[in-house]
Length: 271
Picture 1 (cartoon, one colour):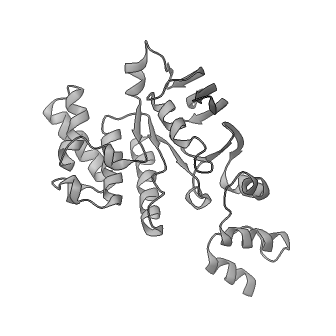
Picture 2: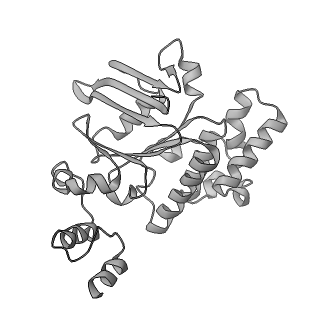
């Protein structure tokens, strides 16, 4: 328990009589990278909004860094979390990147020196130095995501919540973003939870929570959950072709484990 950062205990939420979260429970360790994996339209955004305090629960408890999410503790709780939602263009407040990063710190009453120090830190980690003076409307989609992440962690929270941010990125951008998230995790000691419906996005995370019908139905590393490929398919998680092929080749003992790189599979088969 001493290493638990976030504890979600039997939370429930219904919208228009539709059950979205159904006695959902899980915990997240400090300084870890976690993925919530579930099909589209299965409550990913609702979960992120609930964990961030945007949406109120019907029942259950959420505790982050020892602070329970409730009316009395709300202002303390939200300082411990940063959030980026899927609809990124509606989340910007300012016109320029530098002003977007200053905004939350100015609201917190930080001094000029402290503001510059924190902006320098997140800009270095997220590789933003070349775009700090740019208009946000001139940024690429990938750059906008980086700026929103920077703005959400510039006040040094303990947890970063990301809602399906990989969805519209190409393969190169996905790899680049995940590398940056690992730097955020390692250099700034911020735990991360991101949602996705793609197995390819969760290869290297510390822990995966597979959610179906508002509950956690699987939990573990990628290597653990991929052996439940039939169950994943049943709930609507698509198994990428290379992973499916590799899984079958392993079953017939043609390779020694599951590989995600086609070149490595070919090398193993020809040896």
